Image (cartoon, rainbow, N blue to C red; front, side, top):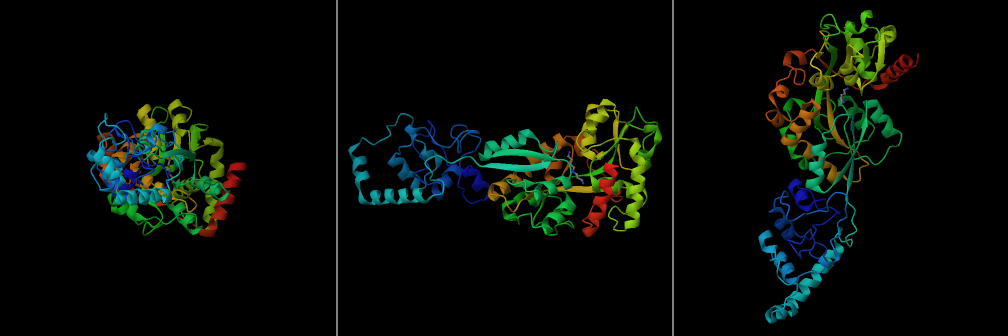
Length: 457
Ligand code: SPD
């Protein structure tokens, strides 16, 4: 990880790549002058990471080892570094000979103090975790998140700034995320569960406690989105993106805007309806349409919801959480049970697509950045989480995915049509009609059975 970036984040130095000597900065080489040395770090910190004259980490895909000709150290430069000179002080003129030729310099080099200092630095370098003869591999963070939920340029910027590679895998529902982790999927660092799934994952001991001092951007998260029921102290989760569940419809294909969830039982749209492939969301819709809480633990009410969903099934073209925007755009469906941002994205491509939250109300949800207990790269993962919450990055993400950012400072950076779009940032009145999905404890087994029955019959 980029040492300067680590310091920016207040993280301790990590075992990965050290600064790489470059032609413009010929002989400062971190394998000898430990990159952990505070003076060296201070000198790096003074330099903008955007400055292309000096790179602090290997470029993506390469290793940190500098060319062999740069592995020799100019003791004069080293001496200056150990005295804490500024970066400017470390930059030797390009024409300077790497080894001193002036007699006075030679005398200096032979002084016992310098010999001891040199030996000390060698020992330091040998003890340094990054003292690996330049064979350190670049850290790769594994992100497991919702499909269509990342903004490539933001990830690239993180990789560039921190010298960490990010690999992304996606899932389509909270249950899929959990099942994969329980099924032994290993190697993920950062995951993005929704509210109720955070509670479940905490209970199952899957999440790491966060060092919130490493996530200073948490301070920019809306107060009302922090400390929610599923993690009252944000011990394990950092709010990321939030939204609602409603109906996306093509105004050219329906006679009037749907007001009620009953529209999804309208025979006129047989074969032109899609539902989310998401157990809790589908039961939420069925329960709310009957005026019930979407967190019912009443088995009679749950059974009634299942019977209604069974009756609806012949009208349903697809249960999908991943391509209903395309189905709407292509006209294959007229009504799609779906998530706010995805429908807004479809509407940007086809303006006759609209989003509505039925009068009976529905789900409000928040997806969170969490780090797995098994992550081997918790420091880097925390830097990534914090980075995603930088206002500029958060604004870029929301501009792309069209889900509301939890970061308050990001909102003012958004284009007006996003910041003031009620389908993305719903009004207080709308929010008052919505309900959070919660962990229903053991009753989840009855939900699972009902869902399986619905899907297989
Ligand atoms: N395509 C990304 C959708 C993210 C939706 N997360 C919402 C979960 C609500 N239960």
